[in-house]
Image (cartoon, rainbow, N blue to C red):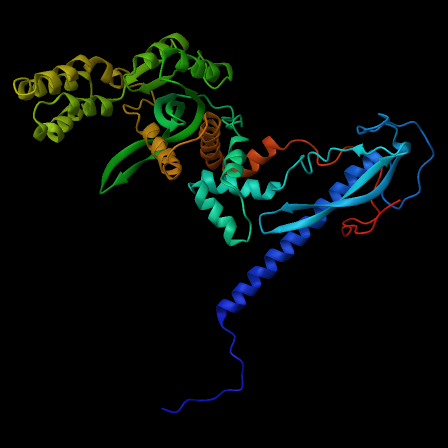
Length: 451
């Protein structure tokens, strides 16, 4: 077939998309640079008592926060503009060069200034880049993955800079407000994560809520409870009684649980945890997680081929309609397994009374028999921690633990967790209070020297 010549230029779609993306990034960088330049000029003008090019006001003796490096003067009337120097700032979409005005005193000394919080000393990466990096990492991207993401935008960010960006949120509020409702049940659990050359225990207290309608799968009701908020998180060298007491006492002091209200607590069999609950929540009903009871039998089995069957039978014991039925099931369980697996059967028998607490309180609306909600939350953390494999510092691990709890709680509240974290960290005003007002709302960066 003969080819058909066309005089019409064909524009490929990827070229259109690439050009649109490039123009969008360039426009974004230009807008951010002009805004930051305006803020920098406002900070300098607030300390100098005037903008560049404006007539000096009569001497009123007002003091500046900046001072002369030679004579130590802080009087604004002694300061003059003395040109500027360039400083490269990296935004999320690219970098730009800013002109930072210089001030000089009448005596000839340089005026040392501080542009914080608009630009911290030696800061090169601006806040939009750092905030985007935190969002990517908390959502599960590794540090190297985030580094490659910014590299595609033409921005180089070091791994240490990304780690420090996360570490800045080590004390962030996890936003566990409950809106006036009482907590009816808690699920307590811990997980261990690698940090530096060792490991740390992540402790957390999880609220358990009743579903309006049970979750049904294949015609069967499989879940009666839903995930509530994370009420408290903590880090410790090990899962000790003192570590759990510190966490639970914080939950009590915050008013998230009340001794005047009924409380149902579900946990595994860690002795430090159980002792801490008795000390800090003595009015609570303590339920041993039946899944943990069944799962622990696997480590006590002599012949591996019985593991699955024995675990299923152990869970079957605790699924009775009441204590009497559960006890009858325990007798059948013992009759079947005592001869072949005496140690595993004895383990279930010892923990029976602690595993049927939920059957002893049928009047309570929320009485979960497993810590499944905490285990599912732990899996969410694993999916996000696994790309990093381990943490270089405890501060970064603490920041990730708290940011994940904040993210979880904000999803329940249907709010933006990243915006909440940013407001918490950067509460300072962008410019110092001043009576000066720039004539143009968003001026272009100055390029000429001032007087």
